[in-house]
Length: 326
Image 1 (tube, rainbow, N blue to C red):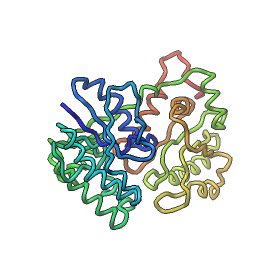
Image 2 (cartoon, one colour):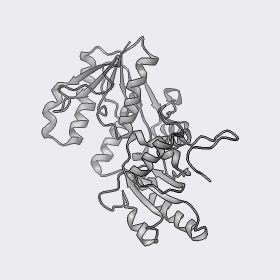
Image 3 (cartoon, rainbow, N blue to C red):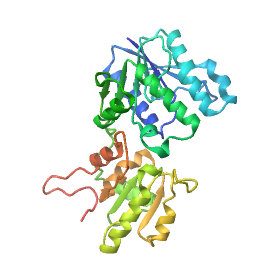
Image 4 (cartoon, one colour):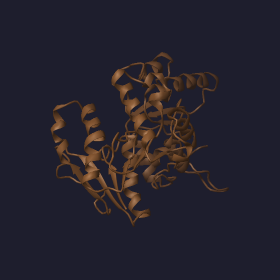
């Protein structure tokens, strides 16, 4: 069977959809070696002669070259054209048996059955994320095309319930396939590696509470800081709070800047912002932390929780846990 995959996010590894696709590109050939997988991506200046992914994988990458003229249009229009025109027509040219879209953007027309992954229904369920008229029109479009898909994949049973309830897709056509942490996420006990990461990010010598994620409103980062201030007021010896991730460029209702809250609450000496972190450093950061904090209002799955659990595994009796948690 020839499976043709929408590769819009193939060169965007810092996004959730990009990470999901990267993991699929690594594992699909291993678990489905009897099938042929072709990744279709739009032509850009960078992609014309560059292959995305690990070159040792038995995957074919196809560039939808006739989309290159869209460079003069807005990124949103180029993305919509790729999803609704270039990708399905390329599936037809490649004689695909199945078209797979690993994010919420199934095409309205397809020459073959479509499988789409819907990670969550945030644009439908959270008013702040519905956007303006164009964003709402796009959400309506992909909601409609999802109902026409042969199958819908999602990341959790909770997300499946939302999809069935709000998109009115029969439950037998929706399958929850849980995400998993990359195998590199494991407890790190190597003292040199822990010391390197501690120095690189200027981490406290003592155990700390750790947040790693985004700063949009549903992540509740400001509320987390306010709750932490109350804990500090009652228990001053509580561990410091370390916050990782790319801070908002501006303080807006959609993406509140947490730094003013830290200043207002007098927590400048208790809360540290360490900025974006390298993927390779995440296991050591999770291992060094006393605990990872994740207080999001809504998630389709919440992969950082699983990553943290894998790196902060409970030690066997008599063993020293990674890092000093005393």
